[in-house]
Length: 242
Image (cartoon, rainbow, N blue to C red; front, top):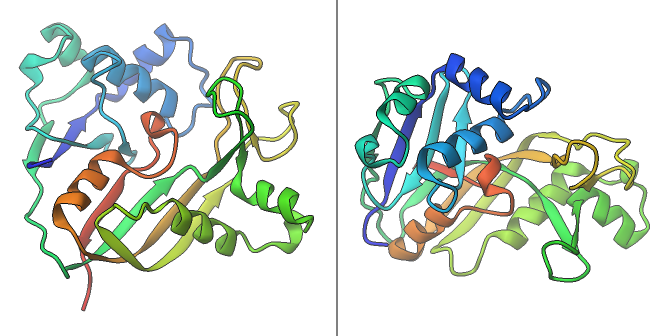
């Protein structure tokens, strides 16, 4: 990827509420993952909808990476549809030039799940990494340190071809999946009840050193982990403090 642009989609909360009502998305979709997924698919089409993305709830801004500037006039959605969902504050800017050896601070909202079973997406099960570590080792979850388990998950899923080496990472917060889904605590589920996924959410912060700027741009565009279409996996970066 030669270019990388940072998009900021300024979402109209009233338009978001209309989409939730039209799509019959329950009000307990607290992180807006499902309704924003529906919004992006409606604006861009399912195949072209940006992922990963991150929603800044206090400003109602959706951030995403793309290989080109944002041009709302070229979206499949009509002008009226766009105006009912996005505000004039939507814009994009090119990401700065990266250089080998540069140190960056990162912020990441990720979904730390482990897949188990058949590789077929419809048959493989997914588990919260903390729950899976307890099952795999026989150690009770209460005896495991979530910060250690989730940090290990990130180190495992930070791809060798990402163009950057982790210096350090911290787990600054986490939210476990809802329980009582019928598949055991900590299991991400699909196709039960309303069909929604119950996903663990972890926020990581840390520092990294760039080794290959081109590969790093591609890694930013790709994101980290699964469920990137629902607001997970976008790595936000800024210059690291010296």
